[in-house]
Structure formats: structure tokens, C-alpha cells
Length: 125
Image 1 (cartoon, rainbow, N blue to C red):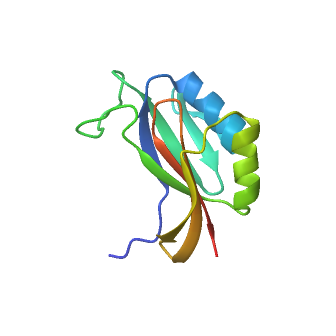
Image 2 (cartoon, rainbow, N blue to C red):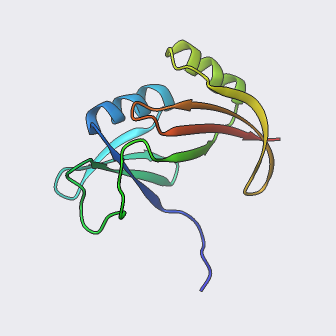
């Protein structure tokens, strides 16, 4: 077997509506409703499925907790990403900083979503 890529991941959140509003407004993702009213955030060919804390769908992570995620998204223009965060009043907690991603050197900035998940926005050099 060979892993070909990542299709989706799941975040446990305190409020699905608050989470969707942040990811749509700040990061430009699209909310998708599917399978009996479930919510996901779509971007490119991937998505983030959302579980509300205390109402997780089975099966789920053993210790599903809001704010335990650490996500890295690749952007096309890090300066534009930082300007977008600034315009939306989202605090950059670190960066720009040199990092190493899955395919090489990149520059990253970090912020937090409403649950405190760490969000890394990165551009490959």
C-alpha cells in the first residue's frame, strides 16, 4: 500500500457556526453541508469535517477536544495572507519564520482559530 494524499481531516470544535464563519471570512474556505446536515470546510480538493464537542460522530478520535489541532495550509502569497489576517483583526502570533514543510523550505506565519487551534499559513520558497 502507498498513501497517495490527504482527503480530509476532522476538527472537534465548540461551535460549528463560529468555526465556519472564521474559516470562510478569514481563510476563504467554503462551508459545505452534507450527509444529514453535517458541516465541512472545503478548499482546493480537500476538506475539514467538523464535529461539535459532545456531539461527535462515531467513530471519532479517542480524546476529541476543541483547540487541540495544529494545521498548516499552503498559500500562494504569504504577504497577502498576513495582510488578510491584519485586515480581519486576527493576531499573528509568530512569523514570518523559516520552516521545513513536506516538500522543502517555506516561510510561515501563525495564528489561532476561535477554538485556539494553531493555524500555520505557509508559502514554499
